[in-house]
Amino acid sequence: MVNRRMAASALSIGLLLSAAGTAPAGQGQDDRDQKRQRGPLQLPITGIATAPDGTKGTFAGTFSLLKFATPDGKKVVAIGMVRGSVTIDTGDPAAPKTVLAGPISLPVSVEPGGPITTTLAPVGPALAAPATCPALHIALGAANLNVLGLQVATQPIGVDISGDSAGALGHLVCTILDTLNNVVGLVDLLNRLLGVLTGLLGALIP
Figure 1 (tube, rainbow, N blue to C red):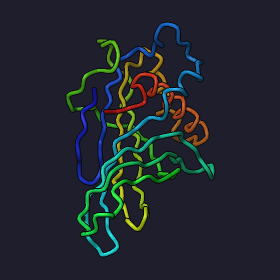
Figure 2: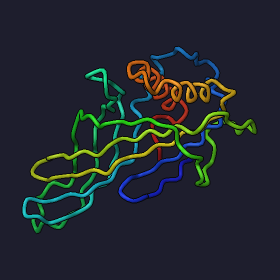
Figure 3: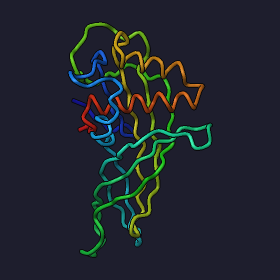
Figure 4: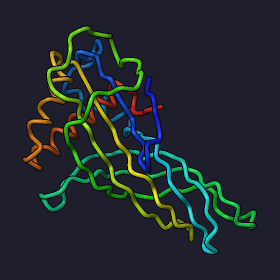
């Protein structure tokens, strides 16, 4: 469903959400219990791993996004878990290969995005109605992790979301873009969007 690409040092993910925001049969908009059962949204994450002797390697895994928060009321962060595998030749067959860290906080910036130019299959029923607001660009910053002696520097993650503004989900995207200067309100809306995405995507961006 999703086309992924490496651009510079960031992993960009484009989501063309053409669903009208209608919940599946039997699932109300406020059915929070069912949403929680789907688990956190998992975003692909990559990075560079460094062994104690300086040997470099690569890291690939997922960032399980649990929620958005604003600890100081001024900045938005994404809280979640990082899990993945390290490919590195340390000369030690017993060297750790699996990375699990968290919960960690990644800095978040939210701004209007450009059009999603990659070829994507729409999520949900395809609708012809054009969006009347820009795409939503959510950038999750990098993190430096120390896991069992390995230094893992993750790459930033960029998520662009575009939806049909005539539907509930597209309207939510437009509302977020109108709330960028209100951090507390923005965090609440981002968490609502997170619930919608886990419902549409089944908690996993492949």
